Length: 235
Ligand code: IPE
Ligand code: IPE
Ligand code: MG
Image (cartoon, rainbow, N blue to C red; front, top):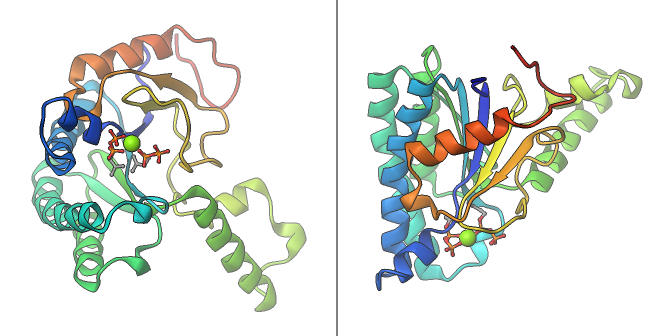
């Protein structure tokens, strides 16, 4: 079995999962965050080296104030827990997205999460928070344009590779496998540049119920695909 080096996940379906149990949506988010900790460990034990998860999109601000507030509260406690988990499990954490719209204390916690885990050599764990692919590309273009204005970069020097270095995922290889839980089959503004040649796997299982076995099923399916570009197939 070939284990994909980098797996990206759109963890979807927290709300529907909770509703189907007669519980409030926010309960689904709490259980979803707990499950993320479990899957992180499972992924590493399976041999996955990079795991990138979508926690909050630039569009998610349009949800009710109650839900956004509850999510932000959850991210605060999740980030604090993650600082400990990263230390205990040797995880290196990166944050994708524009943190400037987040509350200052959350920005600080995220910064210390990234800084305290910088030298860790275990799972590379990317969390996308206030992330949107279009926003990421626009921010990258702005930085590249500024470098041109400042004389550090010539337009003709902008190659795909050079441009990738301006994205939030600089240093992170492109995902080999994308998983979206809970039935929807769309990208929702996730990693559009990076997923150019990624295999997609959709499952009906909602995120809080997604287990190691489901991850394994996705990897099996990935192994059955004929990959043309964007990855090496070891036999
Ligand atoms: C995913 O679950 C988590 C976030 C987007 C924050 P949803 O909240 O989208 O749950 P559904 O899709 O409404 O069931
Ligand atoms: C995508 O899920 C964003 C995250 C998982 C954080 P959504 O549930 O917000 O996506 P849409 O709005 O249904 O496309
Ligand atoms: Mg959803």
